[in-house]
Amino acid sequence: MICRRSFLKYAAAGTGATAAGGTWLSLSDSRAARLGRRLLADARREVAAAPVKPNPQTWSDNAITMAWLGHASVLVNFYGLHILTDPVLGSRCGMATPFGIVGPKRYIAPALAAKELPRIEVVLLSHAHYDHMDTATLSKLNRETWIASASSTADILGRFQHVNELAWGQSATYRGPHGELTVEAVEVKHWGERWPSKITRGYNGYILRREGKALLFGGDTAMTPAFGKLRAKGPIVAAIMPIGAYSPWIWNHCNPEQSLEMANAAGAEYIVPVHHQTFKLSDEPTWEPIERLEAALDGETERLAIKRIGETFVAPT
Image (cartoon, rainbow, N blue to C red; front, side, top):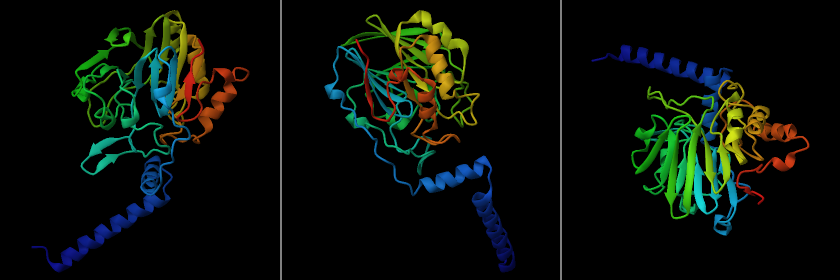
């Protein structure tokens, strides 16, 4: 049995360690301490409503229509076929624990809740990171939803009946009540591991082809010349491209100017910028990515399809 003197000694040591930890968390400028302070502040912060609410029930099945739901989640009506990219519609993204999701909290709510979505026929998953592959959101989709995902990710997607793991250059064709969609995985510059698993997983962008038109979903990527190879696969009506989380992660995430350069290299007519405004994953100010992209589009701002979460873009015919 621990005597009273020993108990007080250990209690004092624990109290000292707790106080030291609190001081470090409050005063340190290290990334870990800043992240800790942000997570603590997030617990008290309200999530703002999306500035615009799309209404997919009014969309034409004879057009290409997109709405940005937040982060990398885009709802697409591709001539009557509904597609959803990297669905993350919860209040946080991160690892599920018995105490809830541990990870960054949204700043802006998704423009549509899962229950407000039309029936999704196809889901595109670029890679297994928590802010792109959210099992809580995926659990709300029909088990028969057709999934295109990166290599070595099917173990996370066991509830779905139609999971297509694609490596770069591989393609698969969805056939459904609204016709066919060909999905080809394309090269991007990123990484795909899902902590704490040590499985080496893939990471993709995708070209979507249907009725003589093509769309590009860039997933998550740093600057790479690989997008120049995609021009021959077009014409690409619109490119869904990441523009945020580049400071200091520029080796894994492109900045807005690089994003535009890659979309241009692919020959995309319009750009749908994503991966900004939703979660605080890096050091650049919240509105800097979209402001820099607008500046980079000097003289061509009509190519910027969407600026705010919830906005809808209809591709001109």
